[in-house]
Length: 305
Image (cartoon, helix red, strand yellow):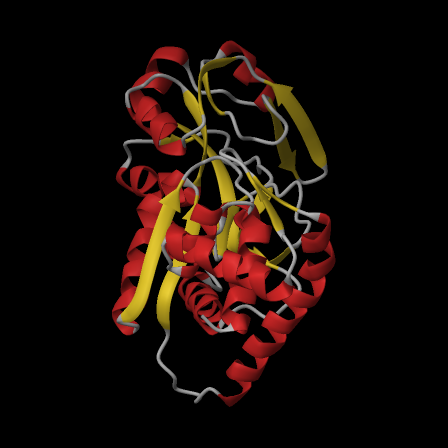
């Protein structure tokens, strides 16, 4: 294996702190990754990594070697991109992470249509509502909704607005009444998304009037689809998003609650490792998603109709 390729593998192992994760990111077996690192260490005459059953860490020599190694690999990538034909086919693994609800309802379809345009791509979509670090977990691209507490080492691009909405089933509202103001929510069963950055504090705006209500969550989940199903069953008032609730609001199985009050507006955001231009396949996917979701995302356009 040539030294540049071994350097690329070493940089990926150092970034992910895992032989297996680096192999997945590069489309290689763990055995090939290990062999490349051994060959590089032999060539340099220095041990670059400490290996254990639980983790991989850099030796002092590895820490000294890594910055120049990363710079060399990136320079080689930029040179290759500079001479690549404008219409070169996108190919190879493409690992994406997204929230469960958005990934299932919208991104899966968009990614399938993108893959049909680029048959040599090998997309992999991981859906999880945990806020995962794309660098640590080896994702080429991570889609997030709402708060992004730490973007160290990450670049981001806005894909679409993400509007929050309160809604409940007609049956629930017939039994419990329709709240006329945010503070009336204290008397209601509220279905709460546990990943909201402010916990059970729900913020409302109407003109210059701002109110914050701390709700008593009668049912909590880290998955928006779970809460949506509970709302359809009449369990309570759910804090949701229009990309998830639009169809139920359109067909009347859910009704918007406090429609004259606005909830915080978030963004649907694409994140990828900073410090260099995204690869052509990542850039092409981001451009495709922007094309699909702007200026008005299809779920909001459908709801408006």
